[in-house]
Image (cartoon, rainbow, N blue to C red):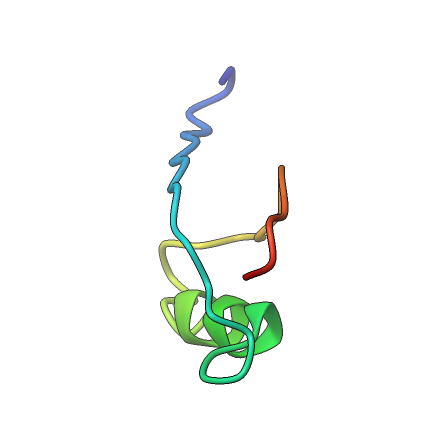
Length: 46
């Protein structure tokens, strides 16, 4: 979190048949001016 870099961590449950993590990452990175990258820290599939 140095050099003005901020980290937002979101916990959510993704029901794979309805929404995949790729779609979720795509939606988040649409905020190009605010989001540099997206990482999946943990993954649980239901």
